[in-house]
Image (cartoon, rainbow, N blue to C red; front, side, top):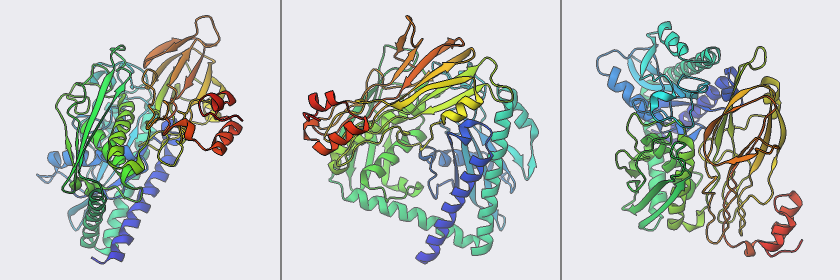
Length: 552
């Protein structure tokens, strides 16, 4: 094919993904969708290979696993039909990140043949399980985390199957929110399928599928060329997660060995710890997300991820480990494991490509508040993504107060929280001296103080309180994460693990995210940069003098 047609169709698919993303974001019912934007929309080829990556990067590798399973179940006997829509939230059979993430997939037909699939994955407000919101901090099996839906049809040849929706909603404490988000998600998936069908009508189905193949080959060639510039050799790294929320005194090890040889990058996770009792386990699709994110970040941001890159990468897993768990191991806290695994992979990649080395970052985490009643006309389920910070790197400070790695999620605004839920935010600011000191400073923590105006159950899921983000090349560690309950009372207590708490109206608590690690010796930091940090409130005058050796 000619390069211009390939590029036109690539841009058409990228624009379509953006359009699907926009319509879903504008149509969502829950704050998870319309504020945090915890979802993705994609177009994949006829075998499930991703063409253009969505903003929510860690969903990107999931679709190949899910579509592959759908093809196994429905693609061989003619039961795959135009107008079908499939649904699944199963971490093991569908490859989904956790039970709260629900996927919808629709095949695209042209000339009677499947040419592509349109898909979407989105977090649901509640899918059952032992706790409101479903994302338990201390589940010990996947059945505690909600109703499990293997890949099945919810639309059959253009006909809606209401019994499937009724079954899902019957298991939810928030059926109105879940139904609204499901309906919007199905609609954008069907819209995506129709748009691809329109492209086939305009350009020809063969041209579209040939362009997809060329786009996939192009990404493979780009990555192969970038890997070829690395020195052949092996590098290893490991790191510790605080605990799994169940065995709170036992850290969990993540480990990787990367080998570059003959233009192939091999990632071996066999030395990681066994799968955990608590919900920290990963499926291979999540490990793939961490690998490709870290690989692209280490080699160059101009690389475009799609599933063509799989040809250049080999992954090695040991069964029944935290990076390759087996059912019924729970998985709801997978994201904090993702973020630690990214740290570990980036550390190992930094040994192979020091020019793009990076210190460890913070850990985006989650807060769920199940209100006793809630505001009239509003949901009683408050779910928030809590951002963190990046570590410092070669020639750059770490970003502060942001979603750390992989997700591109958003922090829910105070105005939304206070208008929709019975809570008051009395503080929301950056915390000085929490970024790891270094020649290149780590990003800073932020903190929020909450006052409850009604009784509620709080579920706090977080990491990097016991083992904070580590510095690199002489840089200092970043500050650890904090969750402080009974704030301002004699019973004030800083907790050290993900957990569930029953609180009363008038109680106050504080969340502080972890700060990023520093890179290089603090004494080598430019004096003007330290002066600017002090003026911005990022570094205290005392720290400037004692740690950086600069008197301001």
